[in-house]
Image (cartoon, rainbow, N blue to C red; front, side):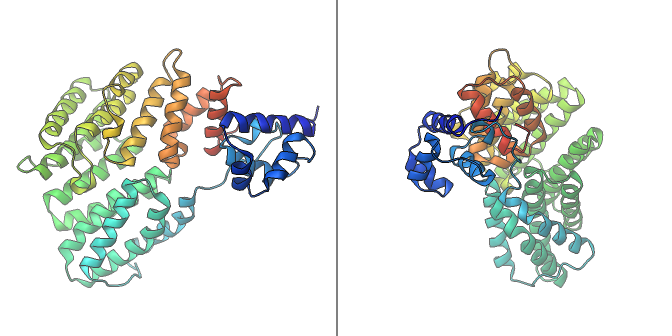
Length: 395
């Protein structure tokens, strides 16, 4: 039986009240007047436009199905998706030896790299996507010009791992495209042949291999990379390579190597404190989040949740780490008895910091779908259905 206008309106009012939002706030976000929203809620006006239903659902941060039971199209792209093809074309152009950028001073390029990597660290993915195509083209064009080549090779490796590859992975782009970025970093690092730059490249290469399921090759790549511990920067970079080794070991089911790597990373973190050498953000708080991820990779959900209680999320140095913390905490709780409601709240916190790192992460999409199958018609269920809808999952 079709729903009446009054039934839909009553549900709309109930959701708005549950969200604690006024007529003025929601109508403003939906692009209608408060009086019109009031008439919709009272049933005096029919809510008979898909576009208006979606606008109201977005304003209330719920799935459209919370307002009406009619089938709705899921959301399209995130803002950052609009830049994906431009980044792809820039990578293809570089691979063809035709970057078609502009030769620029090294200082200007270094400043642009810093801006992009700062935006990536802060989960401002739309800004990263907008800046990357031009930066990729200009870096490669300037490197081909021959001047300041060593400095440019370092910037290229750093940009393609901590910028291009990281961005592509976070927005859920194809594994092959992210691998192309890692490969460009590897070419630059091998020509430069500097330990720190090789380490950045090895980290990116290992993650590309890990995503492809080539665990042994990932482990060999990390094992062959040595930067030492003679300085704080070297200890931080070694610490990140060691954390990557622990994740590969967990994927391989090697408990001994996994534990040894985590302990070594923790020891280094105590000596360095929280830092950001080569944009890795290594330090004690980061090690805690990695311990959670490694435990999850090993299927130890209760252990991951226990570790989460030992980490202060407020001490995490960047939105990237904070979103990872809440995401992994939610992922852990989702598999524990009677902790699913808490899991939804953790996932929602992660989504508020970085929608892409929840909506596009394959593990999170699987967790959300599993939770959705058991969701109740209560406030937590409403929150979960909103997350699922924004992730493009059927609700």
